[in-house]
Image 1 (tube, rainbow, N blue to C red):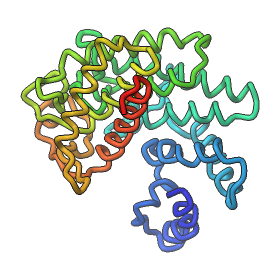
Image 2: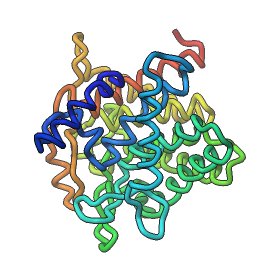
Image 3: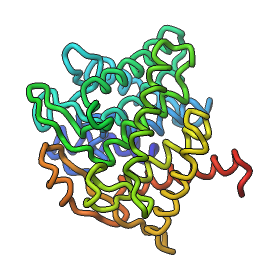
Length: 317
C-alpha cells in the first residue's frame, strides 16, 4: 500500500493540477484535508519507519511523514479553546468521535518516532490532551457512552453509534499502550477507558453482539463496532487494565458471534456503511449494511490479532 501510494503521487498531482480533476480514489491521501485521508492512512508509513532502519525508498517515506507531521501541527483544524481535532462537516467545528481514532494513534506513533525528547513530549502531550478534551465534548455523562458527534453551536444530542464508541475506545487503548505510566494524564485516560468498558458490557445482547446504536436493542447486530470492542477489551484484559474474570467472557462471547458472520471464503457480513452524523436516531437504525465493507474488515482483523495474543497470554492454543 505505502509504496503504491508513493508511486502514485506524480500521477495524482498531474490529474489535479494539470487536468483539474480529482477522480483517483487514492488521491484522497494527497488532496483531502480530512484526518480520515491524512493521518489515519499514514499509520503504516510511520510504523514502517519506526521498525525498519534501512530500506530502498526510506527517504520518500520520511518526506511523506514530514508533511503529515506538519499537517497535524499546523494545518488540521482544531476546536477553538480546546486541543482537539475537529471538522468543517456537516458544519464548521463539528467534533466527531471518529477523529479520536483518525488522529490520536498517529500522534502516539509520532511520539515514538521522534528523535528528540521535546518532540516526543509534544506528541504524547497532544494525544493525551486531545483524549481528555474529546471526553469533555462528545462523552454523554447521562449514558456513559460517546455520542457520534457534537456541533459547537447546538445542544442537540446525537445517538450513541456503535462504531463511534469503538473509535473512542480504540484511541484510548493506543494511548494506554504507549503513553508513559507517569504521564500526568495516564491515570485519567485509564479511568475513562474502564468506565467506558463497564458501560458497554451492559448492552451486549444474548447473541454476543452490540447493536448498531448501542442503547437501542432493536437496532441491528453490527460487526464493526462489536469487533472494535473485542479488540480493545481483549487488549485491556491482556494488559491488566480490565478485570479478566469480568471481561474475558464478554470478549469470547463477542468473538464467537463475529465468527458466525464470516463464511468459509472469508467474506464478512453485516457491517454498517460509512455514516454521516445527525441527531436523528432513525438515520442510524436504517443505515445500510454491507458485506466486506472495509470499516469492518480491518476491525475484524485487529480483533483476531488481539484474541490470538490474549490466548497466547493465557496459554490457550
